[in-house]
Length: 87
Image (cartoon, rainbow, N blue to C red; front, side, top):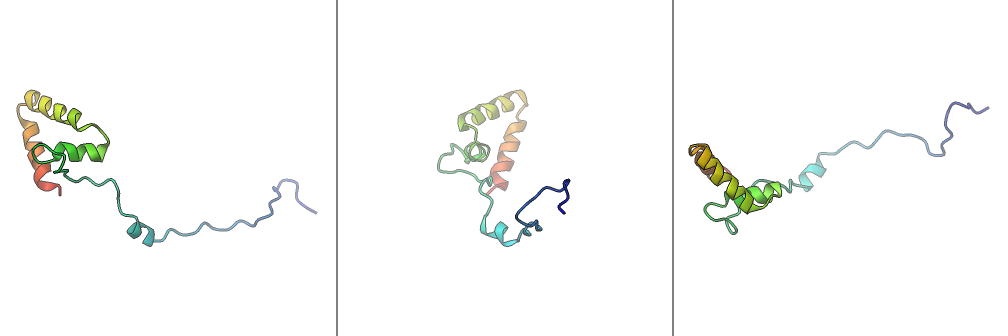
């Protein structure tokens, strides 16, 4: 007799397939932070950040200018650090 509490299924249940480490090697990270020197103005930091984040590069440039003015120049140090470290 079939148990009324158990659902009737035609396919047997099995364990899910294990994740192999080869999938990670074949599919590299697509959204990696890189400088975009071809579309950049100075070092390509804002255009690289724009490509990485999906924002407009001009908005990031305005943010850096405003941060430099209101942050007493600390954004310049951050900009240079990103430009020298990344890529």
